[in-house]
Image (tube, rainbow, N blue to C red; front, side):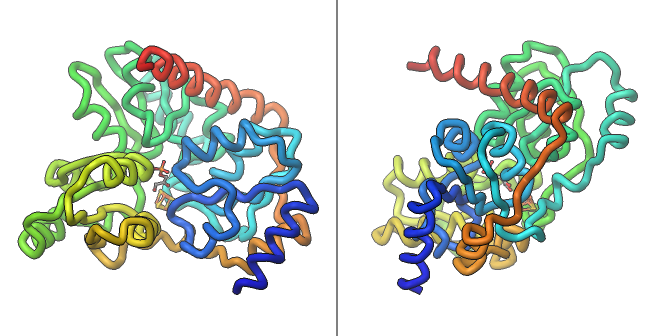
Length: 309
Ligand code: 13P
Ligand code: SF4
């Protein structure tokens, strides 16, 4: 394994490449990753990098987003099977039908969507900034897609904004039921339960904290509780266990594994880089429109950030 890690690092240097890894990836991928984080962080890094090649260790909508943000770079997805079940739950005709049922309402799409979907929405968001994005629209009602649960969580956090959601969901996060949370509370009464907003709203209500993958990791860093129960994909739990040896972590349910996030191995990263496959290509018109949707998100999040500092 060490030899393979060294080979990948050498190849990265020769080809001026970076590896971006989502924190749901198999944990060994971090050994060759330049950046590890959530969707928002990785989008920012894709935008900033001067590399010629980006290897995206994540799922296809993430690699597409990187390509939109770095159109002149070669963006590679090591395994073509790495889709996202939620992103695949809406296609353009379903989106148009949804919008036509609710005309003249701003449409917010979760970054977990294809470029073709982003191209027909007003603004994009990630789970880190969904609340700020919806708030910034200052509208009495917004349409939110594809994730009904993230949309409903945003609505629960805002006073007087109606969030009309498309009925998409993440099968991994929906494996968690309120009974699992209650059982875990009984088993570990002092443990803080940290949930991703893609979980069912009844699960979110029972959690001690709800946040994106990065927000969950930051919560652990900033607090000094002894025990934490992780209610999101196992990759987050694996990294926390690795990084905080003095704290105890429980995975709320052992089936919290996103199969699509787990395809990549170090061999796949090596082969992708060596053969420069599988390259992401996007239609020019779709790209321009999808970029407008993503840029609107950055305008909002950058201005929120500036006001906060
Ligand atoms: P984050 O936006 O929190 O990285 O989550 C992405 C994702 O796919 C969650 O299932
Ligand atoms: Fe998609 Fe769910 Fe996997 Fe995230 S965890 S990539 S939303 S299927």
